[in-house]
Image (cartoon, rainbow, N blue to C red; front, side):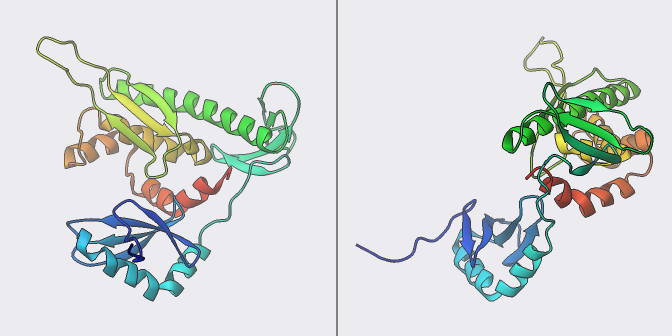
Length: 251
């Protein structure tokens, strides 16, 4: 029986010097490379072909110092605990442990907005997360309706999830067969957008609604986005700079 180590394959998550490393094969890549996926807290080791995965793993060994430095730069987890103050829709919000259903309290006499939720420990964190998801769904439904109407498109079906790789996704409406009626479009958002400034959340809603008329990122698509929210560059830059921090909240 051979004792040779098992070589990882595309998609495997391995541990190298205590660091999580995701193995990827990208046939369009020209060389072996490493990058940090801040949202997932993983190092991505990319090989141009399956035959060069071993070379990518050797590169991981060579760049141990770089890997540890990049992971050390990631934001620390910020659990949802009673007394914590988090940013919700661009403003401070204090988390309060109170029996009963979760409820929001408006700012009052210098005190920030509050989110009261029952339980303690993991139960409290789950209640807070569920309340944030409900608020995200409410706001995103509202903004999606506004943008879909501005584009003269039917309101898509909206769902809320917690994807690590993107803030939103859209499946444009289509007909499934000859003579079939037009299927409604579908949009999915990250609930963590409620932790971002309202203008950033609104940009993501506009971005996904623009996909209802243009499935790609063509000039026509970006023209539609600009028609809804103006120049998107500042919002995109905010998400790049703060995305990892949003994903660290509630962990």
